[in-house]
Length: 248
Length: 258
Image 1: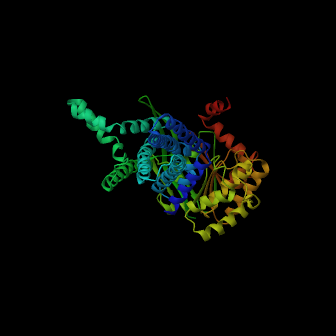
Image 2: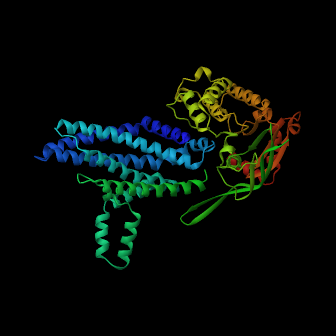
Image 3: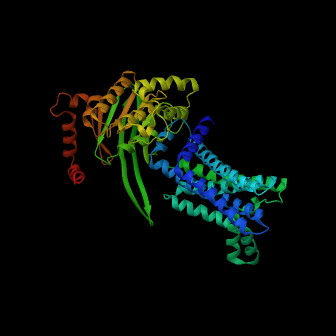
């Protein structure tokens, strides 16, 4: 466990040092500021627009960062030969995978904390009073990004291009946001289309389970969080199986 | 003497597929070799002859297609296996924002050393590699020679019994090469085993007890120190003779010059 933590901290430090990380944080800040302008334009609904657009932008920026970090992580380590220095140490490949993924998640959590901190400042300036639904919305976003990131790690391990890994996992995220529509279309169709629909529903993430909004309750949160953790774990187990056999 | 590394009829073929077409490239073929405890064994060969493949097979980073590789009679990919090995790949990369000390601490922790052991080993390795004065410098501030010392220090921080060094002298100035050779000689005196590759034949000649010559993935000859000591032109001439007299070598040498 100690070595997993050492790898995670190393990954976090590298991402903090990485200029892209700083750029992403700045980008998020600017986008949230833009959402403030949008709020001014929405008469009477200013606070709601500010809340919704801010959360959407936090999700988008964290997702883009997550996909980029995870898709380039292993390929970069192979390119710089860092992976040889790590894998020739007394630690197994599962520890290596868990360490790097944990570091990635800590980096994303930090990005989210920075952006949501900025977002909260803007909300409080608009006389918003604290509501726990905000916290659960942030947790929901983090779980969605966790699922997409786990998928991106998996895709990056068997593709030779980070762009391909980003495209695959990005597609997963897009389709995952449309599962209610896909379910509706599957119910209305038959034959091959219905089979394809059911396959998509089985394979792709159901992000609607994490859109808790203001109507959250304990059962929704527990089932949504368990689903997200299970879905991510499946991709991580598959990644571990690939990593076990992978030659460097 | 007991065998530290043992290759038996080991073969490795690289396969790559593109648009349904698979191409094969021989990495190593019919490779048999034993390296004894306390020995410095050098691998010489032209580019692409299989030196790095040999090292990666010994480290368990590659799996042989046929034959066996045994290191300390332990199965690769286990913790006890890696705790006895130190590895320096060719031109390794370290995070530029870390200081020398932080970088070495990172690898010490990954090697599973306790906090007390880390302090003791860190002090030892900084002194042995001449990095004491540079320990608080960032990696980005180091010259190539100093970076290479960091590479050696990370490989020896856990006091391994076997060192696998892939082109450790690459790009170093003469003084840095001398320092490196002196350090490796000291490690040999301590009973460590060194498996090294280098294009610097003179350094291999001075350091190694035996040398293996690789060509197109085949171990064409293993020379003992007596085979080049006192011989006109030394190891360089022996290497050139062996490569040139090998029937398929002339074409290879021509291609490498072109």
